[in-house]
Image (cartoon, rainbow, N blue to C red):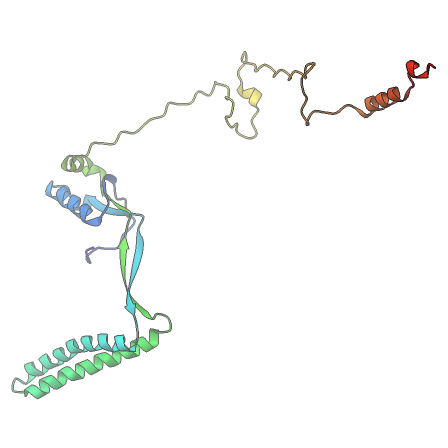
Length: 236
């Protein structure tokens, strides 16, 4: 991404004209819009599902810190040598090389001191980048038609739902707002008939285990009837 980006101010970004997967495709879409004379101030790239990715590049140590400090120190030494040559063109080459070594030493010392301070919190090197799931190219309403023509995108049609009929009684399974009377919502002449009772078991049908058992009084009468002697048994 460009380093010239300004921080967002929370202003409206307009309506989406196209959606792409990567940032390069979004840049191409913006270039196409600008070529079609769409005002650059009306265009915005909005990243959706933005996340940061930190890639670990290696483990930090005193050796790695000294090596990176030496590389940076070479640049410091060259800068000091250039200042010396500009101030004294007749300076010997040994002095030039000496300033380079001084810069290397300074870079190593600074890098080692910095690593000694932060090594307890962070002992690895990494590179952080910003990524998004997809990018929306948006345009303000004043330039929306021109932007769609430039990208060959048709206008989105909005689906309008028909209004609900409030005079129709609620159907089975519909939720009724709490605190309301379902009978009051049912108009006159549309009374719901009562639900018929379930028929009892017929003769010869097997009743399940969950069927109600006979009352205790009936069971006592049956036991008394069995206890009475029969006339056939009392005859000699």
